[in-house]
Length: 104
Image 1 (cartoon, one colour):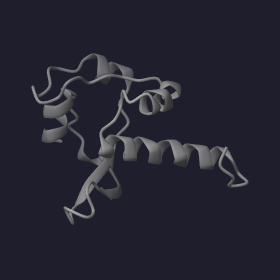
Image 2 (cartoon, rainbow, N blue to C red; image 1 turned 90 degrees about the vertical axis):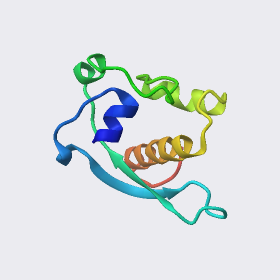
Image 3 (spheres, helix red, strand yellow; image 1 turned 135 degrees about the horizontal axis):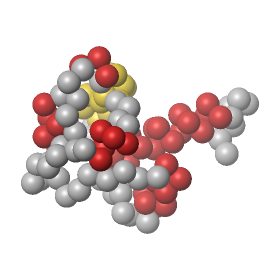
Image 4 (tube, rainbow, N blue to C red; image 1 turned 45 degrees about the vertical axis):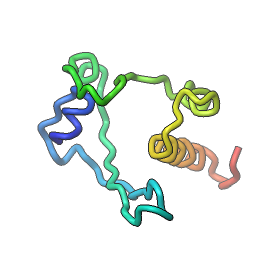
């Protein structure tokens, strides 16, 4: 919770809101360490009332769900961990929508 607040400027006081997700490996051939991943739902009020974030963070932005694929394919979002996590979310959503299990 502390690190989330430092990196985003969004303060969440209820630890139960952080839901564990599947871990990822950022560099499996070089760092045999799994990164812990948590999901949290943030509402517009919480996002709009955020404070300042760490200087190491370039920006904290709300992005329209439909704009995410373009931001990844254009290279605007390019770091491996965020791309992996966002891609997982997009695939999960797509698979849930398609009851036959075929990718669109």
